[in-house]
Length: 178
Ligand code: IMP
Ligand code: MG
Image 1 (cartoon, helix red, strand yellow):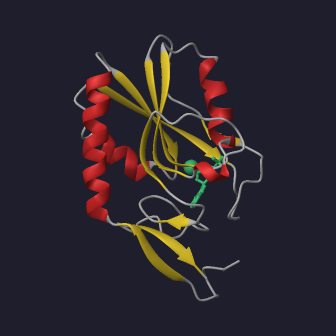
Image 2: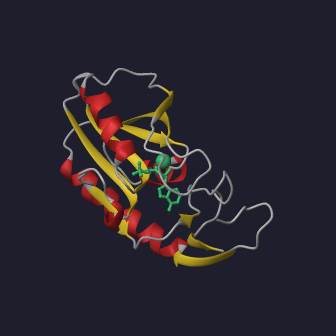
Image 3: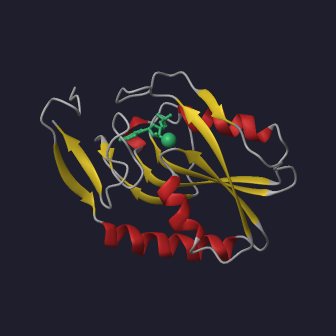
């Protein structure tokens, strides 16, 4: 396993910035058409912060934004199976149409936990938008309603995604090779 501070690592572009932009424009149209009224977007920190800000700007509906902090990985490359809430919402979601915005769905453990938690607060609906989906790795059944790209089972960074808190600011989505 590479240690980003010491071992040599190589980045290979998997999804270039222009392709991300085009796909988000399509998702925005689809979401705007599907929802008739206001939406509350819930971004999952930290990975979703860039996707959230790009997606919010291509949605036409009246939109509120809030964030939740979830931590499941520590600094490893695969899920620990343990999910921790590090920041709760500021707003109530009761009776509202919730769009959960995630960077990537991998095992599905994080979203299973989150959806369960959010359902208890009686929103009118919950849907999921994820920039990336790694369906091969799924351990829990999670349906992504709005998916940017399905990708193979490779560890990716950039466009919000990190490895040990690095690379989040890359414009492209890249495979981290050691
Ligand atoms: P899950 O609970 O296994 O679905 O993991 C979801 C979370 O793990 C995501 O929100 C990411 O923060 C992180 N994650 C999963 N795969 C990757 C990856 O390839 N690169 C960076 N982070 C990842
Ligand atoms: Mg995440």
